Amino acid sequence: MAKIKVKQVRSAIKRPQNQKRTLEALGLRKIGQVVEHDTTPNILGMIDKVKHLVSTEEA
Image (cartoon, rainbow, N blue to C red; front, side, top):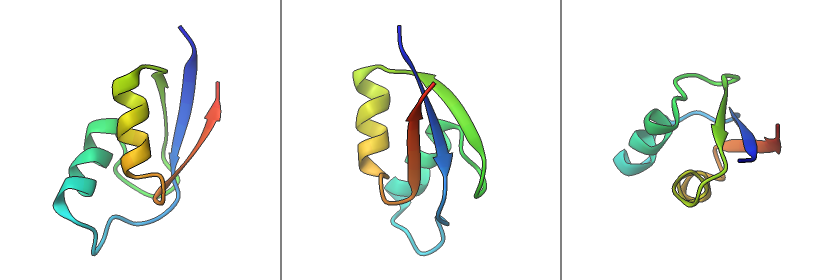
């Protein structure tokens, strides 16, 4: 299965609670942190929900 790297590039301050929880579910806690996930529909949906706060690249 393909991998995707997700990096938080913007703060979660003043964001709706569901976006904050989505970042936590992705494993992101602070700006600049990078996590690696399998490319599944669930993960891609979560990334799409917070695409304005993160950047992605193929691993």
